[in-house]
Image 1 (tube, one colour):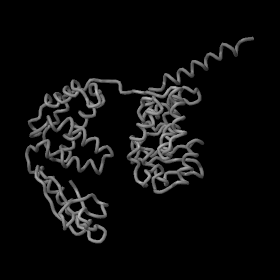
Image 2 (cartoon, rainbow, N blue to C red; image 1 turned 120 degrees about the vertical axis):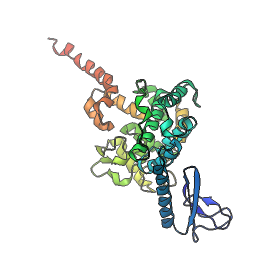
Image 3 (spheres, rainbow, N blue to C red; image 1 turned 60 degrees about the horizontal axis):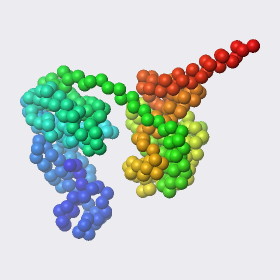
Length: 363
């Protein structure tokens, strides 16, 4: 679905950026484009001589899709999902997660007119997820179930906001059980030592830079991989994380420690693109998860990449040198409540401090 390169010789379609067809037709000199979009269960296809015209055709098709839904008194959940996904591609960084979650957990069970969908239909999906085994083994975690429910509610609310549907959202009467999602799994000293030892001898320098930067900065994977060189001020040792790359959608400028400065200066020496931490081809480093999996195996540790952030926060909190408010700013949390999961470590440092009184008042 969308715009692809079109071969007039063998009539095949290819991704934008392809240079030559399987039939040897060159896309460098003679480019044609095919626009293909599914509207209300039916595919609409048209070719265009230029990318600009292809985009205009795509926009026209999308407008037709919205008009078809508006003409329907009670659109189907399927017809609403299609334009929502198009909207999500331009407005949500996690639109791929939405698509996967919908295809996997929602589409097989939630069908038909929105006006006929009952709260019990949605509750069935959530209960089914809670009882069935996930592909990775074990039951689906509460967090996955909660995200699926949030997606269903968001899609229906979006259809109401767009004027596609005039009814109420059946999700409004469903209550999801509360669960504690403050899961932290920081590396202990043994695991940290093992990881650093593996990184010191790992042959993929770019992967090592990302992992070490995550460990010494406490930033999220997406924030790190999205960094571009215009975000860095190596003269004054400051780094700015753009709002579009931050989870809370706020710009954050923080100082850089010596270890991270050394990593960034080395990255500058091997710079090949606008990304600070690119792939070997200079693109967004999308293959990092595979490398991270191998590194974990060699280090004999069982943590998520995000646990590097928890390790950073836990070690700083337990050092007794960083208060909870400073830690909040370093992590980029929007509220202090999000940082409270590390409060017990800060309190542990406070207990050590108050014990000093046992000695200072000894005469």
